[in-house]
Image 1 (cartoon, rainbow, N blue to C red):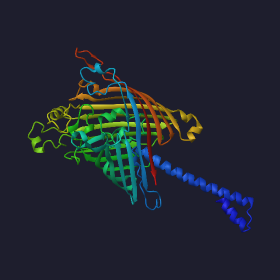
Image 2: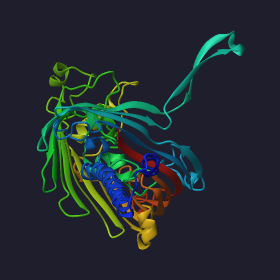
Image 3: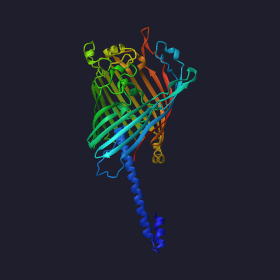
Image 4: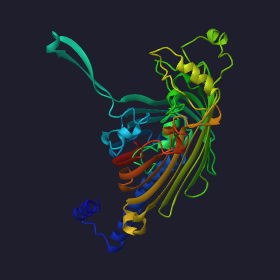
Length: 485
């Protein structure tokens, strides 16, 4: 542009002094710096909202029409993982049976696409916005129809690939100001660290952290009504009204996790629940969070009418699910520390176990025992060795070496008492690995983990190891990014 201007001046025989040329170049430089600062400010603003809210969809900006006239309103993004693992233990369904020694030398491997998510959001102005999220788990689903030559030319439908496709989020939101926002629709229930921070760049492991992922729904999404907001000094809050979980589908391995969502074309809402989350981010690099859930679950069923239940031995059974969780994250000086502790209680667990086991064959129930108490705790620590090199910091590259420890037990107590039933449901897990980020949005991960199953009571009455340990090596490539257009 400068050369074109000079060429035009030369043709008109206008002389440009050295001082004028220097002033013009300084002006251009200032304009370029300002443009770069504006771009960085926009990116930092998006990043700050993501870090404050955790869940990417929570980063939808609030728009004041006068202040934001002409600004970008469309948000596009997503996250996903490509993974591979080799396990030096069995995946046979009898590996936790009476003779686990038969499977002591088994091993297997897997390639997978655990989650591939596409997010689209739009800010209409005047405080109104919409967010949507479509998730493909394990590559989605595929089916085909074939004509079988060996069976007289019959048409046959076959499932060619397992997996799931789900509309994980679809909500409409009205922001009155930063302190008061109302949201309605399918949305994430941010109970626990994993539900609020489930993007693949928000944890060190190749796969999501096992503890919370095992005992509570993840990613937990329901149709809900939410009141939320934030303060200028770093407090963020959410309170939600939603349908309760369905106790028909609780089981020993995953506690109340299968009770979310619905196997039907609608969500049963015979009982209701509430959830809440509070985050504090007022200290640089630190986030402290409390979250919880409470609601009945037993009558959220189609198996019997309320009149039938009232006339039965289950008249007073409520199946109240109570979950409390604390989680935190600290990131500064090249260090990331994350941790969480989640504890859950189910009232009337023995009665629900008896009821589910008695359900007819082919029902939605797994017909299994379910615990009255379950827990999950985890801690991870990583250090970015690239933070020691100024050039690598300027390139926004990072290389973390990390360690993680988990303990979880989906059968921690039965009928309010400690139990050894299904001791394989409880375990310690230790892991070490690396995360390399050539750019902020893309990471390469490698991890070696070792699962040590909980001890239990042997047939001779002594306590000790009952099941085989579970070592595993995994690698993955992950992506998470969100952009305004």
